[in-house]
Image 1 (cartoon, rainbow, N blue to C red):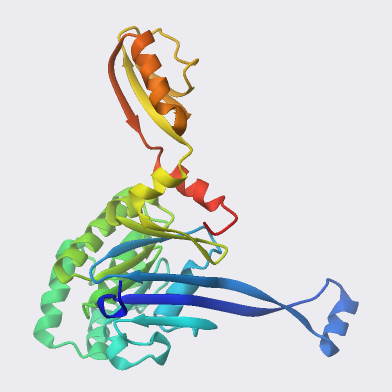
Image 2 (image 1 turned 180 degrees about the vertical axis):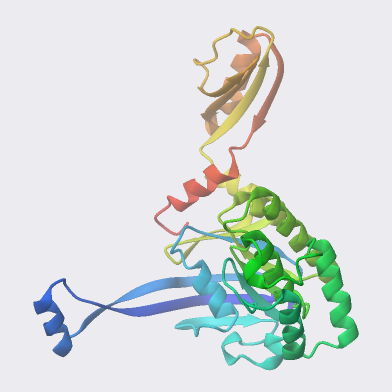
Length: 329
């Protein structure tokens, strides 16, 4: 993929922090006044990837993997230690007005709206900051109010809203200028299932309407499965995987799940694999991936089966396996 056909281009990106350190105790504290020691921490360590226009990509990794640091560099809040990045043809750290008008960074449970005034007044402030034409602003605002079900909430002070209501307001406010690139850092964190679903639906609709490019971090795999065909996985600041979500399961899953419906509900299938679930004649077996074909053939030959299906493991389990990798693959 050439740079001219990408919205986000990242090449050999690094971010290193110098962290002071000392031993505990008064003597160590006094000694540090004249002789300080420090160590380097590599928050992001030589990662490269490209994101095409209109693509929605999951950016995954455990806490401390470097996800938020990367998003901050891409949005211009942090300056890279080394490497090259561009977003919409701009160098983010230059913070050019034309660049800032086309992006947004949403961080879960971080407030941008004014706490003591209604959200609709904060929306007006954003309109002035981004110089959005009045007619366009009202049309977009009203669309977002309908899509996020904000009627009756926009006139309340933000401090009187629940966490889920406030998060919906934050997202609406952050997108009023209709950015082409969305950096979403845990946008559904701490929200209940219904609110998570509402926000996922809104992000999908925004992507569809405006062909926006989205880079999404989330610990909720339901967010990733619903929105992203492609995922990038980093760990200890390094790239572990970049490809389709389905390929992630094929590459890293060490087992598959065989779901069997039995004519005789009392049959014992423990000899064929690990029984992970059993209910009214339906049995789920966990078997080694390499043994799936052989075990399936044995089941069909030995047991009276009325239905059988083979599935990849839950994506949460796959991601956990990926995070356990200690080397760049």
